[in-house]
Amino acid sequence: MEPAQLSQAFAGARAMDYRGLSITMPHKVAALALVDEVDETARAIGCINTVVNQNGRLRGANVDGLGALGALRHAGADPTGRRVLMLGSGGAARALAITIGLFAKPAELTILGAIEDELARLARDVAERTGCKVAAEMLTDASLADGLAKAQILLHCTPVGMKPDSERSLVPRDRLHSDLVVFDAVYNHAGLCSSATQPQRVAG
Amino acid sequence: MIEGSEMFLGQAALQFELWTGQGRAQGDHALGVGRAAMNLVLVGYRGTGKSVIAFRLAGCWASGW
Figure 1 (cartoon, each protein chain N blue to C red):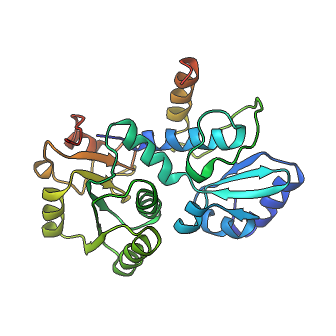
Figure 2: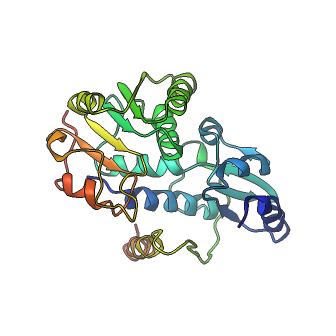
């Protein structure tokens, strides 16, 4: 569907009384303006991925970050009170950073990114909207090595490793350590998976 | 190592809860839309994970979560 057709799609969903919609890129931001209500998490993130039709009123939500947070908790890696290193500052990073800032506040969240203005905006928004302690740096070999050495949880949220480059990884195998839990937003990412095959748990 | 498919599964489960009212609602997503049986359709391009999620969901439902 083309972006210009989005409002028609929403009108159709209202007319046919759809129970809900799942919104994917590139429509997540524009969809925010087409619902009647937006929940707190989605408003802080700045986009929606879920619409619920409640008696004709469309309510927007964003469960991108909550899905990731649930996976972390299920694996015994709740970010609350931990030192968390995030790679990336795009949409996936934004959803996860805002969500853990709201619901699982880390002791420190360090974000490494390659797009300077996007990185600065994300760090500012997470700090202002969640009260989370955030540091942001440009992604370099030095900042990655330093961040990995301190981190208890690594959140990989860049597109590196997506098909067809699934063997690529930003994280050299020798930089991983036994106290590090690795979360990779890219699924079927052979490169990062092969670097961290053993499930690890945060101690303490 | 926690893979991205775990995140997608978690998102799908939360969306299912929001649309059906079945399962655990979390945080400010407890919208309470009532209970109703419905079909679930996964739509996406090739290689985007439909089969992975479908198999995982089928496994969850078969085991009662």
